[in-house]
Length: 348
Image 1 (cartoon, rainbow, N blue to C red):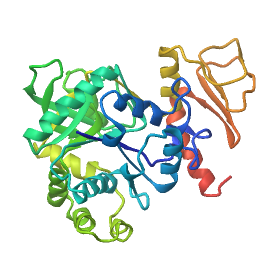
Image 2 (image 1 turned 135 degrees about the horizontal axis):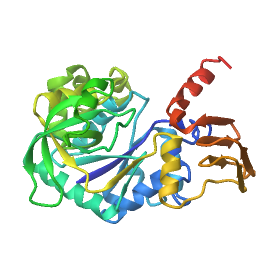
Image 3 (image 1 turned 90 degrees about the vertical axis):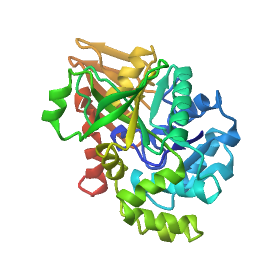
């Protein structure tokens, strides 16, 4: 298996701490370490530095190398520009095929997520590797939610394919977009509805074949890259788009398998999720001390180490940084990205 840590976003929902110059996955959220460092350390329990790859842009590659000195420069795949996850995933496959590793399975390890216990995640990788060597199907992952999870897509699991080990594998009966709320609610208590957490695993050859079948306008530039064309020129020809533009067609056609999580998956998508992670692990938000009067459960973060105080309010997120101050209800923290949109539009 070739693990590829993939990162390149800004994490606008984590403003004002996460910025284009230092995105959230490089911030010290995990016991003094960044999400990138935490994911690297997890993979290092199984793989050597020579076996771990990173895909990102040029500026973030420099940050990554400063945080993990053993990261090899030749193992960094550079995206010339941001084209979203669909083109980026295809580019990873093209890079691997170009260096002669088209028949070796790879897994995309999303840098915004953590997986505990780490040992169970490593066992999960072994299962994914075996599957990708014995089938040409798209391999992904998911878990059964206790309630509706906002901002994610879902899978409906089908027949059991493999259950000999503690890690179960199922066919995918349907792909359910996050906007299909009626369908999500219909299956919520069925035990078949899964939050789709990606963990894309295939050989580069099989993934590129899937792109050729379902997204030929992406496949053509990728093939040119494999054949030695200038990466930046060809990558610019790929329209921006989500990986789901390819994957959901694979799911609906029965060309995909889903591995059930044997681990707990923590997605650092919003400040509310960060707060939950900190509470569950007895971590403390960065500040110079805090006072909460006539209120509770406020998440108070000060980048400059100021004392934070609240009176008469509960369940808020308050974040102070050199770039701004955020005050939001926890359950509204998913809208923080709209603030960044306003700032970038000059509407401030």
